[in-house]
View 1 (cartoon, rainbow, N blue to C red):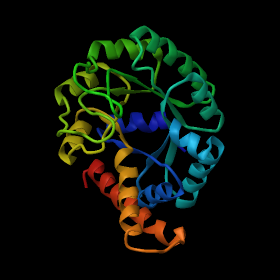
View 2 (tube, rainbow, N blue to C red):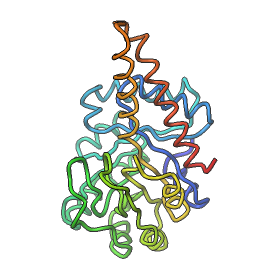
View 3 (tube, one colour):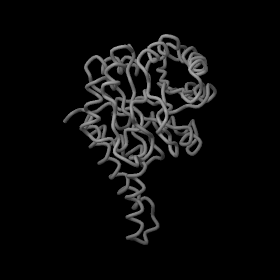
View 4 (tube, rainbow, N blue to C red):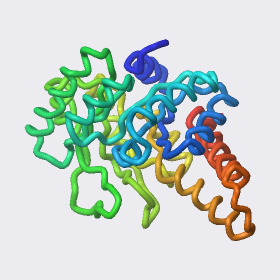
Length: 274
């Protein structure tokens, strides 16, 4: 199978993008992969530290790789927003194809130092490394008063760290948007012209379809989706539970899984321009 590094470079060259979506349990994993299998679309499965703590690292990794094989999907497993060298190392030991080390809230020099350590480690596993530069608001954080990624600084960061992919701040945020998001497409294009590695958009949940497609045309290669995936599953599950006294989760959960499949199918079509 092609390495994720090569896949991302291939997509960057052709001005295309790949969907990277988090999964939280067996049902969301199945929902995502059913969509990818039906559309014959490659996909990146992502696990956050919270999901790893919930499922268990070994179980989560085996679930992901077994499901990819069973569904016949070309896919990779990625650590989303890894907060430490130690967690990245544990994930690489379990066979993750890719890890993100997120030291974006630290100083530029500290971000470089920590990221370089993970890059050096990942080389032994021939794994992809993603890092973040700039401020992409996380849940509960304010977006105002924080800086976007700057092209020259982004180039310096990539050159000093040796990363394979860079998550940039151009107006997106994690979680739900309180007002309509606006991506700085001109800034994105400038970063793309400077930086030789694939660019990643975090916080894609809630961004209008046309804006996502414009971002892809101007340099985004990997699009992260998390909030919408879990929200879709939970909203459908709540709706179903209000209508039934059924206690057999095997009869209730499949409908919520189908809702995830519908969401991911839609997002895959948006990203591919179909």
